[in-house]
Figure 1 (tube, rainbow, N blue to C red):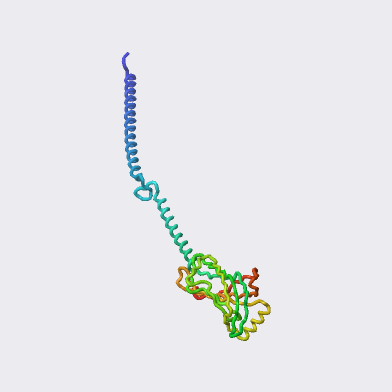
Figure 2: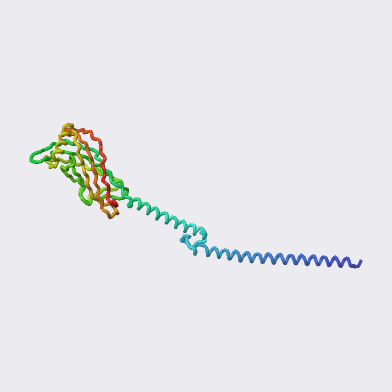
Length: 270
């Protein structure tokens, strides 16, 4: 049996099929090889980029050259945050300094305790008072940053019927009064004949009060001071009006109602 047209056709088809398979195999092999080379090159470049972005050992991230680990947006947020914090800190410090040194608060003075054990009027050879007076002064500095320093001695003048009969020193020149502190001054003074210009009206007033056993004595306080961080020197004047019951020296307990002293109007910038 001889080969006919059908047999030739089959052979041709088989040859074509085999050729297609070879072409597909060659194309697949070429694609795999190309893809492998591309992946290899990409991997190589990726490693190089990572090596460039990696900061040197022992350094911290914080600059454009070495900090691939912190994004540009993050660094900008940190920068603006630091600026805002600095501005707020400056404002707070300024407000604290302003409150501490720009606004001056006046002292408060209270006679916490007082006793009068002698108060006798002498008319010869001149009008005078023989007295013994003890009192306790509480002086508070309410300023929380400024201390007070005496530029002149702190003094107290004792008066009866508006006339001074003695003057004593409370604290010396240069003495300091810390901020937010209360200083307690104990004054014990007396005289066998402190001269006083009472006049007739004053003598009449003395006799009137002597009958009741309660004397009205005025304590006038004067003090010139300077404050921390302030150039102006200020004069502090206060008046303490006391009603003192005459008691015997051996009396151990004296009832006294504390008196808040009245401050005179302060000078400008004080």
